[in-house]
Length: 40
Image 1 (tube, helix red, strand yellow):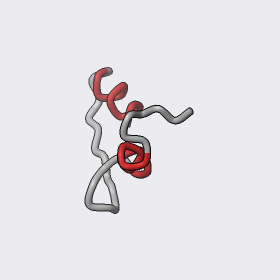
Image 2 (cartoon, helix red, strand yellow):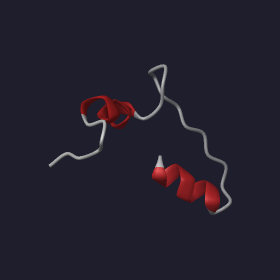
Image 3 (tube, helix red, strand yellow):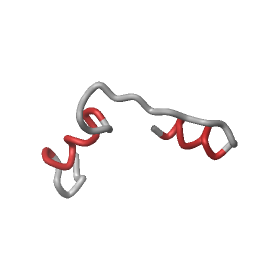
Image 4 (cartoon, helix red, strand yellow):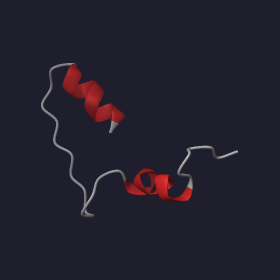
């Protein structure tokens, strides 16, 4: 997603396609596993 943002900020059209109902993949689930984002 960061790459898509960088490309869009450079003036190019970007389209993100996700096969699941929400974007983010595993990163979106980390808040459930690590609600304080303290992984250590």
